[in-house]
Every structure is written in structure tokens, then in C-alpha cells.
Length: 268
Ligand SMILES: [Zn+2]
Ligand SMILES: [Zn+2]
Image (cartoon, rainbow, N blue to C red; front, side, top):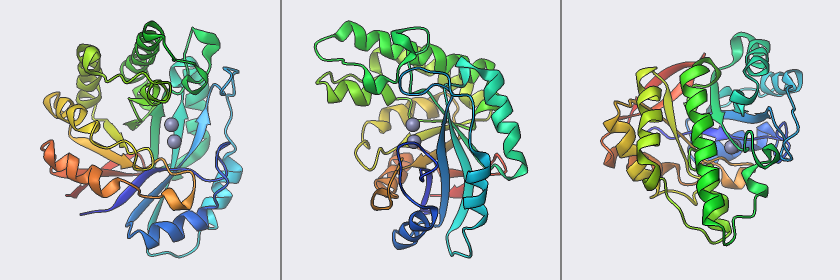
């Protein structure tokens, strides 16, 4: 199996202290063949304030200083809330130049409700109505991303993101009640030649992906990227092997990585 981790963070992200060299060393220990650094560029911060910039100079300096390694290292970006400010999203992507390999399209925030705060800060305890609203808000803007701003992402990151914090607050939802909306998104992702991400959330979210992978396959999906969302070296590649098995179980024959924002297929 081709072990690749296409969702990882370093200290360029506000919520990580990891150095790129430590992440590469951890990748090597874990037997990862290809690693992509996808530091956060959220157009809205956790409190919902606009933050339309990314420190490319710092990110590129770190990337250029990575040295020789048996692990192939790619330069990516986790671009959050592109539908909130697509102009800023495009400007940031243009600033990266030719070296950018991969863009994860994320939605961490409510948009147009709850002060645009990160779903992380919402208290979902004992409020199933708020849970439904959050999923609908995230799916509405995911649809906007894939249908109107497809140049702002390569792979659709953690479509289950708000569910993480509902589970934290004791509300265990799946996307099953939202199947039609999710299928519409998946058909668009597939038809436009984009990828779906299986995000293992440091190995904590795995089996939940199988039905979603089956839906994506039914929608004509071909490209799937896999990432651990590690913010520290110890979490690198956690759950990736199992995620690759899930891809097989859902009928996929390949896992996808990206180079120069183009998909590259690797046989499972
Ligand atoms: Zn994320
Ligand atoms: Zn992430």
C-alpha cells in the first residue's frame, strides 16, 4: 500500500508547534512515502474575525530548508472558509506561485450565523436543532465552494467537521439524514475532477468514512486523498493504513496524492 499523509500541520498553523523537520522524521519512522504539509489559512479566525492573509514567506522558507529526505514532501494549504471571501482566497493561492502542490478546502466556521465562529466554539449540548442548523450551514457553504469556487480547492477536507464537536457535546449525528445534499455535493466534486478527503482525525475517526466513501463512489468519484490532520509528530499517519483499507472496501482501486495541483493515482 502507498502510505501517504496529505493533511498535516506545522508551527505555521496557529494551533501547532511542530517543526517541519520533526514531522518529516516522524513520517520516516511511520513508513510514510509521501507527506504533504497543509498549514491553516482560515479566512475567518475562531471568533469569526476576517483574516485574509497567509505568511507565505515563512512557509516557503521552511519548505525550502527541508533538506534531503527519503520521504517525498509536498507543499499544501488548508484553505478555510473560501466562500466567505473568494477574492482573498484566490489572491492567497496566487501568491504561492508554482510551488503549491495541493489545496484542502475546509469549512471550520459558521458563515452568516453564530457570529461566524468556529464550530469548535459552539455548545451543542442538549440542542439537536442547533446541530441540524450547523450541518446545514456547513453543507450550504460546501456546495457554494464546490459549485462556484472550484479553483479554491483540490480535495474537500473533513466534510464531517461539525459532527466532531457535536459528539464532544454528547450529540451523535451522522450525515445520513443529509444524504441528498451530500450526494449533490459529491456529484459536483466528482464531475469537476476534484477529490474527497478521508480525514482520520489522528486515527480517531475511521469506520464512519465507509458509507461516505460508498456514496462518493456511487456519485462517480475517483480521487480520494487521505490525511491524519496531525498537528504534532506523534500523530502523524495515525489511521492512514486503515483508511486505505476502507477505500478498498468501498471499491476504490487507488489513493490520490497531488503534485502541482494535479492528481496522481497510486494503486492500493
Ligand atoms: Zn481542518
Ligand atoms: Zn487540519
